[in-house]
Image (cartoon, rainbow over all chains, first blue to last red; front, side, top):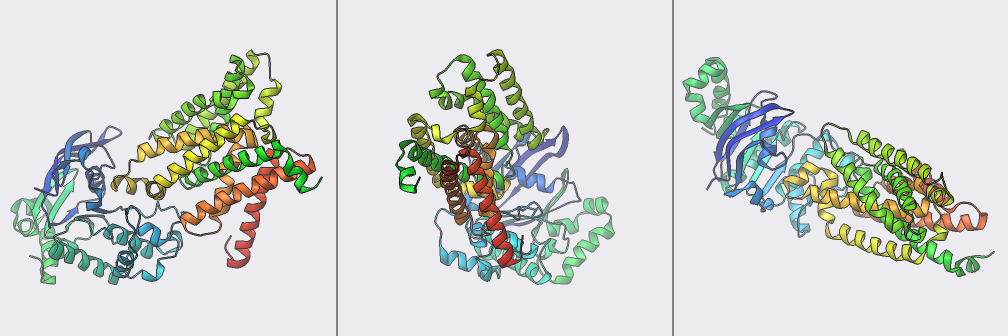
Length: 245
Length: 275
């Protein structure tokens, strides 16, 4: 049973198709990178998967249940793209926000999760008083605290410094490998694809490519679509890291 | 007249109790509204309350039950504002302005039809908490109990939806249902608040205590408690000074809300250098 199954998904905004007849499945433990140019529908796809947006056509299943019938939201950790929209006047402490949605508050779990993101010292600070990077780390901690089976990150590392970004990717890779956590990562960072994410979904309103990174690098169709040089650059970038493939 | 003498009057006791309950309810709901940038909804609902009171007076319902009778119309208006603000095609502030103008226009036309503005309608425009009756006191207590129960029961969901409604939806929070509950309770609160501060000043009870508490920069839970405390404090001080100085209670309550806001703002600036 796939963790995510998307079939014939179409979403229109003001009559314009943002994504069209998208279909793919994500199995348990897969680390999937969703890539594509600006406006290709990556974030829209994620919002449709999570029920934030309602598609005009198609269906989404999470853990084998249709989205309308799905209730086990504690299995999912989500980090939205925009932190710019964060209300800086919101009087929530880091501890309150990280524990948001937890039915049972567990101080030890909170401390562990905050330490994992190196923000244990910020627990009592208001979220609006933090720097963008600290806010992002707090939001990552929030997504991780329930130890979810499915993690969905929409451009999670934009506000992070390189060191924290590496820690974040290593952590998600470890969760995927050791705990079998499924990771869906929307990213512009082609260096991440292949190094951490073994599977790739290339979107441009439609699915251009869906499969493993190895298949992507070997695909003559993709060489034709991107040009052999671009394909080689992406794949070579990965080869240099010496991992993943 | 000394304090024990003032507090001995039954109508003063009723006013202070009902006023405190209504102010607490308004402050609790106001915090969610202010943080979600729906501050103007109080104004919008107050204006539709004006139209609703005019309808009730035209129909000839006894002024004794006017608060109760105006409730359904204001609740419907509140849902209309919610539906319009949810629309991607109309901005929230424009939607509130639209319903608000309709409420005032309807009020003016209906009062004209019923022979011009009368004393009853004016008393609702400016409010008079000292004339609160037993029905209104009981209604205030019921609404207070309901709002506190809703806030306690849905605390986590309300926190999430106030922080980020999309994130809340991804956590399985029924944001639509929560919004409808919030808007309906705000409508009830606005109708009751018209008795305390008058239609002209209803939004002050929703906005000012929340703004004052937000200046404290403390956790969400503490901000809620502080907003309620400031609201109740302003009602008690307002009624007391209105009685002693023979001034309108509603306006004095608003003045004390402003005084608290300026005090907290000033103290914060003094100690933290942040304004």
